[in-house]
Image (cartoon, rainbow, N blue to C red; front, side, top):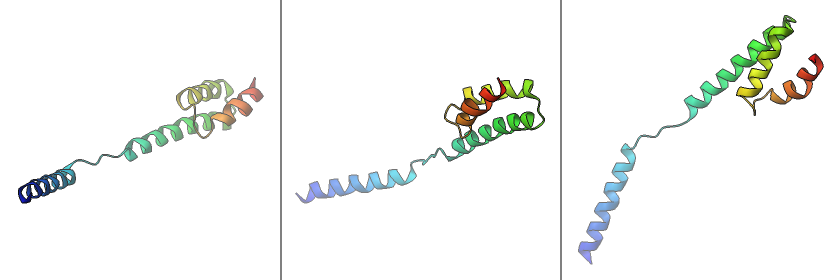
Length: 86
């Protein structure tokens, strides 16, 4: 019984040490890059819209919607802006 407890304790200690050296990767850098890409796409549309260059803004709006279907501004572009331009 003592030998079994020693083996179990050694295995537990080995797993604890192994777990501490395992790499802990997160998705934060990926999420930040995604947010930046969304912000850049929206800014490109916003700048074209502000300049009243609708021939340029319309494809940018559609590209934003296609690339970010759940983006912050997708509903606005789909339900409000695009219908008002057409």
